[in-house]
Structure formats: structure tokens, C-alpha cells
Image (tube, rainbow over all chains, first blue to last red; front, side):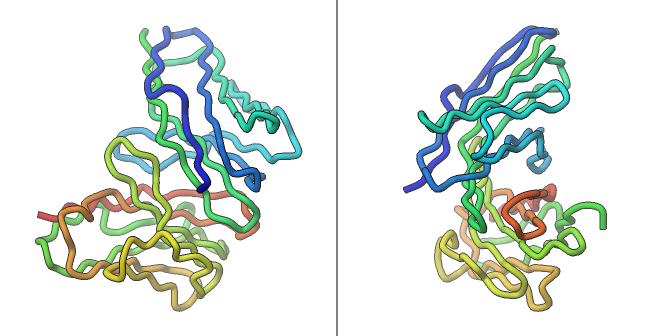
Length: 111
Length: 113
């Protein structure tokens, strides 16, 4: 079946470093991908999205890269801050299809 | 409203009881999704509504789970004969319906004792 998974369960970085969180997906029909940030006790918060006709998209301090050839996407966070500490999920969907989530990566930012 | 609203935020119920969880989506969003999230896991899809109809209910674990959206806005997730394994955070999301712009609520934490 389709799946979206993450390579690393926990990523620890120092404040000010750049963070890279990776994600693999298996469903070739997925054409839309989202990165979410989830803090304890809260629902997933949208960070950035990308469609399959793009390979890179930038937001404020965040960049998502999509490699359709190897079915891989990554989230890059520049100048990571303690407030970025959270669990990050990638999710993928086909048109009018449900989002499928991975299990998440916990980002720990040390001051 | 400005965001997706879910009530109650917390629900504790006894094993075997019936519960209803409510989701109030963003005004105008035609698509509504229910997910279930266990501790340390990503959200797991339950059911998706496009308007009033369930477009995909393949994630409902068994016939104790049922959801409705009678007027194409508010949705209610209903769980009969609750079991301890139903304990989780139940998340609702809505979108304009074109396969983008999903916004999640804060969830209802259900605890079955």
C-alpha cells in the first residue's frame, strides 16, 4: 500500500544550525506534499507544501525539496531556533485523495 | 470561524459507552477529514467527506465507528461501545476541496477507562 515514511525518528541540532528532515514516499500517484509541525497537545500546523510539478519551494526560513525520481522529499530549516523544537511530519496525497502521513521526526534544538 | 474547531478538547469515557466528537470546519471548506493519532505516531486516516457525502471511509477501523456531515459543514464522529484501544487524539481537518490547503484542528483527546 501507499506509505510516507521518515528516515530518522529524532534529530538534535544546536541553535543557529541548519536542520534537514528527510521523508520517503511510495505512492507514485501522490502529487501534493505537505510538511507539518506538531507541538505537544496541538494539531498539525502547516509549514510548507509542494506540488509534483516542482522540485523546490522556499518559504520563510524553510525550503522543501522534492525528488520524484527516488520518491524523496526533505525539509530544510535555516538558522534553527528553540521554538522550532517539535515533531515534523511529511504527508502526501493524490488529487482529491486523503493525506497519508509518516510517523514523524522529533527535532530537538539546544540553545 | 477562523480555524477548525473541535469539541470537546478532552473526553474521558468508560469502556462500553458511546461518544460523539464534533468538528466545525473553516467556513466554505467543502472537504472534511477525520484522523486518529496515537502517541508517537503520525495521524491515521479515518474518513473523508466531500460536501455531505463520505467520499472515502476506508480508514474506519470497524462498524463501531461512524461519521456524519448532514449539512455539509459540521461533522460528528460517533464511536459505539468504546474500547480502551480507541484511546487516542482524534483530529479533524478541512480544505477547500481541491486537494490542497488542509487545516487541522487541535483535536479531541479521547481516553477510554
